Length: 248
Image (cartoon, rainbow, N blue to C red; front, top):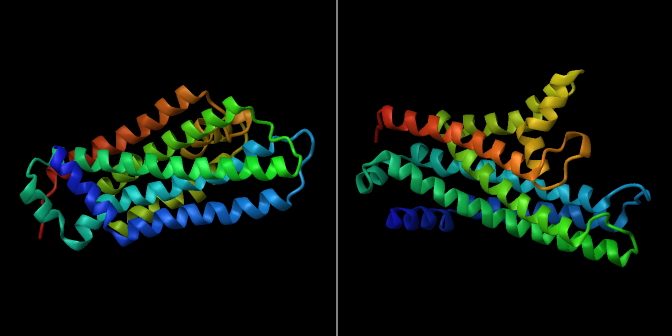
């Protein structure tokens, strides 16, 4: 298991797509955060620290895609066959891939949230604007956001294992986050509010303390719910992975 995990981490470190997504997520967050924090005006009743830290939530979207390509690339390029020759127990192979994706997601989340928090705090302090966040709030938000990004990477891996087609899986996760959840969220009444609160985006925002108070869960319930989403897809993907034929 240790050797298989090392192999999966090596695949991540030496894949240009993975490195590009990591660099792209960090660059996009900073490109948005720096000018907005430096130029935007904030009302005295707002919490700019929370609002601006929400930009770091883009890391979770990139983590979803990274998780998807962590398994679909193997099927797309046929490298799943030699992987299974090295580790024929498919459950063990999926476990190694999941562990690697969780570590990658945690690293991505920690870097993105820490940098975003530092940039926001420094610029707001330099402008004499109160962030509305205490030191404890910043720490809780960074930890929660990092955990959310980690679980998002695992969720992406599960979706990729279920769908297997790389383009289809990426379109599916992005369509759900950007289109379907937003459309369902505008439905009046309790259903729309429930989607905003319990959907993937809402749960991620609750973990990072960036969701609005009306649609925010506690960090522990939010983390457990996102973990549940991840486990459903990972278990389903592993089950399908065991039953499907692999062609070279």
